[in-house]
Structure formats: structure tokens, C-alpha cells
Amino acid sequence: MKRFIITILLLAFAGLSFGAENLPAIIPLPRKVVCKGKIAFTLTESTRILLPRNDKVLRRTAEIFVQTIAREQNLMLKIREKDSGEIRLTVDPQLAEEAYRLDITASGIDIRGGSSAGVFYGLQSFRQLLAQYGTVLPALQIEDAPSFGYRGAMLDCGRHFFTVDEIKTFIDLLALHKINRFHWHLTEDQGWRIEIRRYPELTKIGSQRSETVLGNNSPAYDGTPYGGYYTQDQLRDVVTYAAERFIVIIPEIEMLGHASAALAAYPNLGCIGEGYKVRTHWGVFPEVFCAGKESTFEFLQNVLEEVIKLFPSEYIHVGGDECPTKSWKVCPACQKRIQNESLKDEHELQSYFMLRIEKWLNKHGRHLIGWDEILEGGISQSATIMSWRGTAGGIAAARAGNKVIMTPNTHCYLDYYQTEHPQGCEPWGIGGYVPVEKVYSFDPYDQLAETECPYILGMQGNIWTEYIASMAHVEHMTLPRLAALAEVSWSYKGRDIEDFRRRMENLRKIYELCGYRYAPYFFDHAEVKK
Image 1: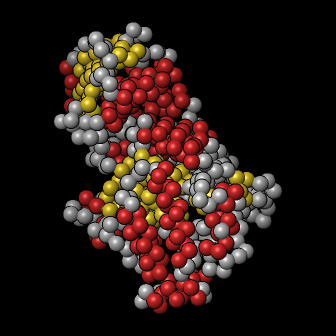
Image 2: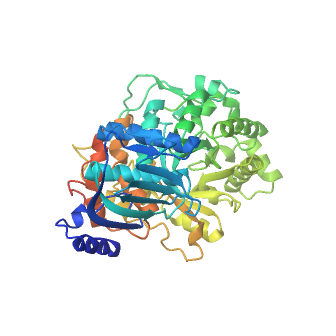
């Protein structure tokens, strides 16, 4: 709270009557806020946004902001590239890439970013100030930059499908919280969601399941066919939409497990070669890609060739989790592969497979991300590990010199309940209990030596959708926990849960202005601190 004590003293010196509750309420917490308290500037319909000439990226950033403020504040601002303006947007190369500085004075508002992304983040903070103060703004200065370069959220569209418009709504939600990575889970046992033109059966067969189980894998099914997929044109549209909000989309193509939908479309890629179907219930299934057949590598490399043309992300996620090896133990092709490559066991077979895929990705200018299971048989130091089974995998990877994204189910699984007592007040869910305070308490560096900390790229929240079939439910599970995750990853050293509560009341206003359907427990103080 040290920086807030300094700010309160400044307010008292200005002779104002309000206290800490009136301080700027921005999430994630900025590194430095100086508020002089006196009224400095009032926005009106004649307020103009001034841009550098011919900067198409900043123009689009300004246009998005204008649309947002028109909706939230009923105020239509104007954009100019010449003369003068009261809101001045500029890129300042002396600032770090994602850093920004926001100054409100009597002469107007200056927002400078180390890049266009920094300007965008400055505008998101300005948006929160407008929600707090309205159009009559105090004199203040903000200097800010994120703690981590990777601030992510994952949405599973394999179990349940979400439309392009719903995905854009999710991206808007991430942008509000200064999240800069959208991990898009696109293939699963229950549905293949990405058009691959070389393999049309993936969407013709693999994107459709005959029905969906009711409840927690009960004996009952709904009897209703379910499906959906994204065309390549739709994917390009979403990638552009996210990029305009400085969010990089990282696609995930599952291998070698969670492959039922792909095998239903192309059964020759499995060890048995027949009898596969798109799964209608949830779980881990024994049917996986055959690691002994060269045709499996050819297929997945051809898929990835189309994927990397659609997604400019540096990283491609290849899954690697929950891959049973039972079929490999009895598959002649897999056993021959183990023998020919002098591998010790099936775990090393999976690592051999992943190393080949990684080399292919590296050759094509991309890098591999996998879930922490890919460590089990050995992996190259150039692979990035996403630690989900707690933090142990991430700690081991960092100590081995691998880059790590922390996303432990203990703190970052946003499909877990937000209340200890979900019966009667929550839709059916997968279980677990991760309240806002739990997310907020997470330390991505826990148990790591100072020399190991640089290997932690950042953290991510995950929304798995076995029991989440609508965007309304996604929003309910994501909010307000995403705000806690955003603050840990942006403001690692400056956190204070009680001041976070104060500032969340302001962010809640934006949730309501946007129509986001957030969970109430944190605001009702109904959670148990743990």
C-alpha cells in the first residue's frame, strides 16, 4: 500500500475532502499513480483525439476506443490527424514496448506508449477512469508497464462450440483486462473445430457428434446432434480482430491423445485403424494417434502447414497431455518404432514424436508449446512448457532451462467453482473450488531461485467446457477471476487484496455496461479466504 499512502497525502495536500475510496480505481494496478485531486479536464462531444499522420494501427486503436466510449459513456469523440486535439495519442520509443504513460492536465489527455500496444493499454486504463469519474476528470499521472510478457487465457471450443461473434466477445473481455494471449483449443475427442482443406473429413465427420451426455457422464444423453467448426476465412477474421486489440492467438492442435474426432474422420491414423467415433461424453480415451506410422507424421505436418498460414503466432500448441499408451504397447508399428529408434518405453516414444513435430515447427519459424506431460520422456530445451498439474512441472522445466507458462489447476482453472457451496446456485460444473482470492494469491515464481525466474514467461487462466455450453456461462465462470489473474500477471509486485476489492467495484461498472454476466460471490464477500 506504500504508493497509495503517497497518493492520499497528495490528495490531502490539495485540500480535498475525499479519501482512499476516490483514488483512481484501475485494474490491473498501475506501477505509479499520482493524483492531484483537482478537476483538470472535462470531455464533451467536441473533444478530439489527435493521431500522428498516416498511422493506420493507431487510427484503428482510436476507432475501437471511440466505439467503446460511445457505448459505455454515450459520448461520440472525433478523430483527427492534423491541427490539434485534446486527447493526444503517440508512440514513444523510449518506453518499453507494452508500457504507457497517461497524463491528464488542464490542456487535455496525453497517452504515450512504447508501441501501439502500449497506447491501447493506456486507453483501457482511461476507459476505467471514465467509468469511475465520468467525463469530469481529475489531474493525474500514470506510469505503467506489465510484469510478465505472457498474460493469457484459454477457451476450449472442442467440447462445446462458440460462434465467431461469441469468440469476439471473449476477445473483447480479454482486451479490457490487458490480456495479450488467447490460447484457442480447437480440437478434441468431442469435436474438431478448424477447417483443414487438405482433409475435408475432419470437419465433415470430426466436427459432429451424435449427441451429448447429460450431467457428469450420467447414463442419459440428450439425443441431439451437436457440431460446428470455423472456416479458414472465419479464422482469419478472428485473428485480425484479436490483433487489432493486441492479442496474439495461439492455436492448439491436440496430439497424440484427445484424438477421437480426428480418428473418426481418418481411422487409418490410429493403431487399430477402425471403429473410432466422435465421443459423446467426457474423459480420457485410449484411442490415440499411432506413433509408429509415418502417415501420422505426414498428416499432422500437413495440418500444421495450414495452421501456421492462418495463425501468425510465434507459438503453436500441440497438447501432449493425457495420452494413454495402452494401444502403443500392443501395436506392431509402435513397438517397431521403439526398437528402431532405441527408445526405452512408450513415454520416450511420445517424446520422440514431439521432438519430430518440434523440429518441423522450428524449420518453419515457429516454436512448440505443450502441456507438462511432454516432459515425462524428455524434451528439448527449446520447447515451452505449460504447467497445469500444479506447478511442479513448471518448476522442473524452469530448472532444466525451458521456458514456462504457469497455469496450474490449483489457481488458474476458471471452470472450477467460485463458491464452496455451488449446490442450488451454480450450473453443473466439473468441480473444484478456485475463488478470486485463490487466483489473486498465486505466485508464479514460488519455489524458484532468482536465476530460474527469467524462464517463467507468464501465466494463463483456462476455461474447459465440458459443462459450459454458452457464452453467458463462460462469462460467469471467467469473471471476476480474470481480473485477479490479470493483476497477478501485470502487477506482480504491487498486489493488495483489499485495495483490489475497492478497485473491482469500478471494473464491475464496466462489466455491467458491457452486459457481461459475472459471478457475484466476490462482490458479496461470500467466499472463504484461503
